[in-house]
Image 1 (cartoon, one colour):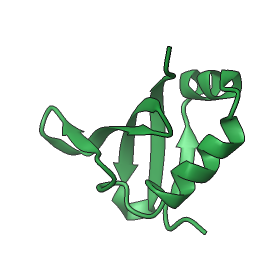
Image 2: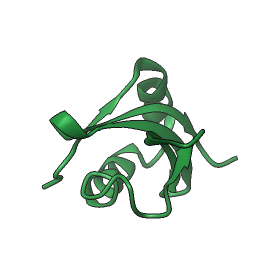
Image 3: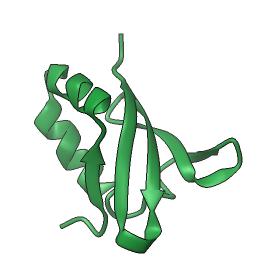
Image 4: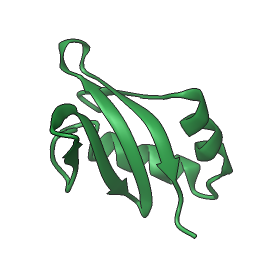
Length: 81
């Protein structure tokens, strides 16, 4: 079970639905960024610690971390070509 809840902004959710392996992606997100959103090769965007980007299961994502409520919100997803 993930420590952080993973949520998707509408644009990211639409991209997720188009992935052929959407369920696998959700599972991988829970095991990686759901446990530690500051690890797994992620990096801060514009020096803002809670605004981050990473590549998960081959998909580039940009996300925000809300530490006070243990929530990761994916705001953008770019699947591999």
